[in-house]
Image 1 (cartoon, rainbow, N blue to C red):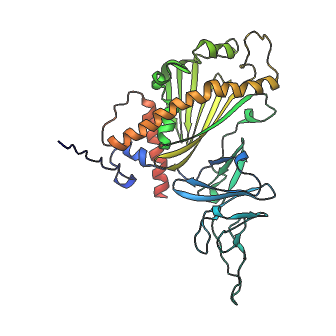
Image 2 (cartoon, helix red, strand yellow):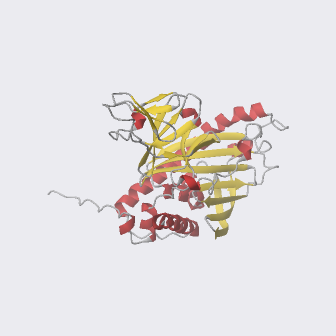
Image 3 (spheres, rainbow, N blue to C red):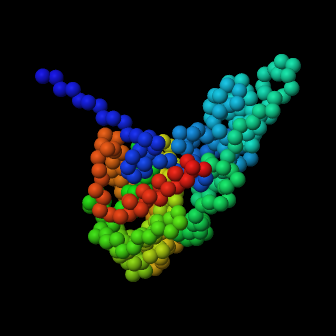
Length: 361
């Protein structure tokens, strides 16, 4: 007997979505915000790279002057990706016919003969960029609005702050909303039962104001003997955590001494690059048996060890879960989701509202 498996119907796009869940999983992120494109160290002077934000391609390049610039990723001549081209000085030249564009998108030079024509007035779109916290951010929306939605201020990330810092990033095969949900829905503690980054979470506060959702859990943070050895329990209250979704970014704070921000780059409905900044107050980090506050050099030396032992393995468990959830949604998008925690529902409503604001505008 031959058994034939019927292929599942594809999940609906946004215009065909009927439920809130379907709308959330089809929604992009509003482009009138700053989004992470690359780590600063990933783009050297004279290099160009392609970055995709919600199915739109950008050519991001660093000129010989060290300044980063961003253009729509097409040559105005034959539409080749400019990311295939070359950085020449502070301009970007298409690999095919040698048409050159400056940082404002203006074509400034054509390598071949003009055949008796004047230099044409050709221009492509340029986009604002800025470098902060070791990340290159791009503003893919209306450039005139770039100052209306500022990046969060993170003074602790300053080199002179004394805080321990762990940058991390992951390319995950999952919708951006699945990742944001994961970072704030602490009902998934079972996933991390061997590493116990948080346990016994009870939601104590949930509120939405404007474009932000704030929440607080009573929970045990770093609830293993090994983690407690490296966190100063006397100076840091690890029995509660505040978190939030400050659209389109996610954050957390444990006693204002253990913090993180997550910036996501939504590439399409099933692909997201997530940039994490974890940072720790100098009076929180300790070495067992050392009774005094650690000097900055020692704190800096401890951070790569903490990343290898705790952060990367923990987020790898999250990767497995969010990618499996995406796979499950792709197959069972029409099935109900009986969520008990109100946090994902609040996030869902904010994501949908902001996406519909964009579509309406």
